[in-house]
Image (cartoon, rainbow, N blue to C red; front, side, top):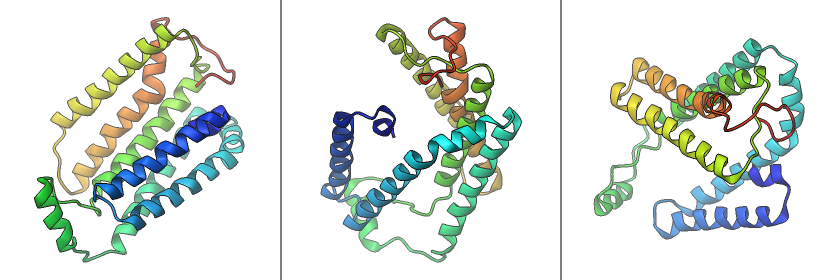
Length: 221
């Protein structure tokens, strides 16, 4: 997506090489089958095409909505994500992890993979909703200029990363983990806050600390 946004050929080349090497490494290490990687590449290409094709008209449509409605759109999108995730899991009802996976996990000394674990669905859905809240809120304040000298960008990166780690590790230590509605809800809330921090909280703090300025132009977020 970054390559599509920047529109530079060398970024496209580097991005494609990295994507290929990551996929190849998964097969080389024996942690994914070849069809897993190929399907992943195909889905990634489809999502990239959808992003490039519909990002601008979707953004223009959302800009005409109030902040509340923008957040509601994000919430509905996150609910759809959850429904799709559970729907996909239900299609594999009674699924058993292959014996070879169990053997490989034992040999590698790692945990047994859980491809149908719903927690991942709530992680992604919560992050999506949090980003929607943060983006809508910061946009209502006039946006944030993302450019600037390398020193300020480095400081912003460090502050942003610290915030993510505090929310990720702090809430991870407080919120119980398990299966069931309350555990999924807490995970959703946890990653909603992380998404909000990335898209809204951190940019707002950058402006307050004079590490960034307000701007509604092309380089703003």
